[in-house]
Image 1 (cartoon, rainbow, N blue to C red):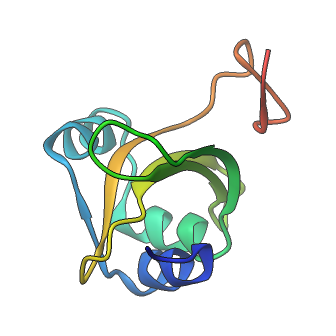
Image 2: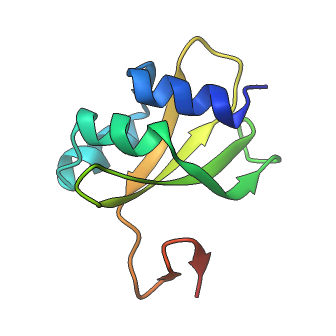
Length: 102
């Protein structure tokens, strides 16, 4: 299983792929590949899903150079690239400090 450090490195260097769902969400929400790289490079783990349906995954929080908060759900599969399952800006009505569910 990949480590958080490996996932960060892959996100930061562009070694990632979007699920079909994540790609649609990124387009709808105007999230660029550059923002994914910036936010992913130093992302922190905020929720761990070791028993997720298809493979272990986690919810990460990262910030772009412009300060935009992004949540990424990524798989920790041993694949050549990190797969982003979904991506979005955390809603302040649902999250405290982007890190804890209300």
